[in-house]
Length: 119
Length: 124
Length: 98
Image 1 (cartoon, one colour):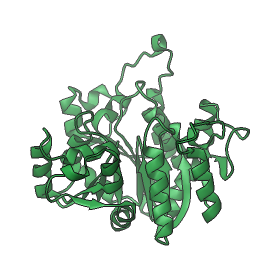
Image 2: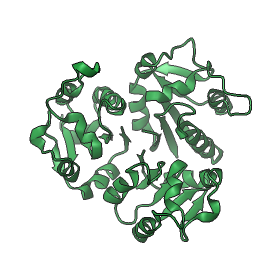
Image 3: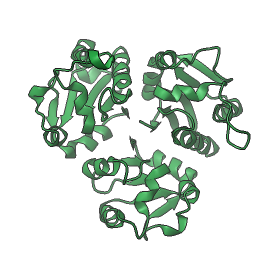
């Protein structure tokens, strides 16, 4: 099945990004396609490489970046939401790209199922 | 072009109140973008989402842009399928006359059917 | 339709919305703080049992374990892992009540 994933919450404050990560990973491991992970609203903050969690905690941006590299995934960080929150090309980690909100509509059209995390 | 000739069925569901959080405002931005893709778009207001289209908003003193007038513009984007849950209105002491737009009033029972009818939908 | 609930029933009206809008027979997945809704011996137990009369209720194992309540689930709740979550999402459209 062709999945899309939508993330609306930022890192650490809520579990949504972690849940979305585990869901995406499990879907890929089961052989499903994940056409795009779209980061919207505070979800855009998951992309910043400036986060520095303590050493014994997970690094949310890095774990997303590593998953992207392993499966060559498409991560889109909404430009309008990103600008509002100080996220730009200078701060996003590897594997993320900033793109238009229309790319969420595109995945809603193309994916069999877009699963939303947070709101 | 008739509605049947349009592309996929997509829907935005508003279920959070405005200003206290940004969900509904950014949800509205999503509606406007979706409108440009010539798909079969629906918009549904349930729970606290109905507050997003309450009339008479004056937001100057809280310093947040009043985005309710933008809801009036969505018909200009060729988005005409607007729905609102009857019970959400009634339980909050409002009627469609209190709103900046007049969505079609539906029963709670129809909400899941409307969701099920979409290819994909998002809730803000 | 699969209804996803990630908030505690004591802190949020998500479960009220699901009860109101979900058609009989539509499955519900409790995850994140939503798992507290399925705890035995708690105030919400009678409500969740009522809900289970009309819906299959699933809970996400990983979130149960994290919260130390894996051994406190109401009887009849189905425990699944993330792979099971993916299966449910494959079989059903999903609605996220946050």
